[in-house]
Structure formats: C-alpha cells, structure tokens
Length: 89
Image (cartoon, rainbow, N blue to C red; front, side):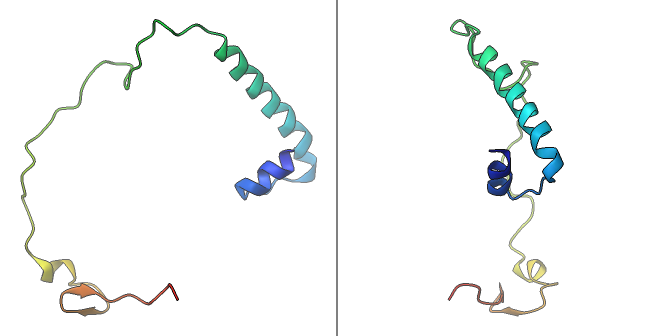
C-alpha cells in the first residue's frame, strides 16, 4: 500500500523504509480517527487563531501603462507581447 501511495505521489521510498513508513501512516490515521471523535458542533470556524485582521489599503494603481518596460528584458517580442515557443500541437 505504501509503495502504491509513493508511486502516486511520485516519490521514491527505499524497500527497507516501506514497513516503518506503513507504521507511521497507520499511526497518523489512528490519530485522525481520534480527532474525528471530538465534538466540534459549538466551535465557530476561524481563519486565524489570533483573531486579528490584516490591514487593508486602498486599491489604487501606482504603476503601469509602461508596456515597453514590461517586455524590455524579454529575449523576443512582437507588437508589445512576449514571443514564446509553441508547446501545444
């Protein structure tokens, strides 16, 4: 099972690490099962444990309208656009 998961994740695991890895994964899954038993019905979802919000700033354009500067270092351009090799047939 671990070798199949490793193949799907495209990671290499040596043969001698398969059994210890299986035990580690089993322990993690057991811990997740324990967490699923905790009643969280009265717990509000939260995005941050600190309760602080990030400061917002005005959304104003401070730079732009300089297409020449954008493509200045490009190896090849045409009509103000990047020229890239075709990758889809």
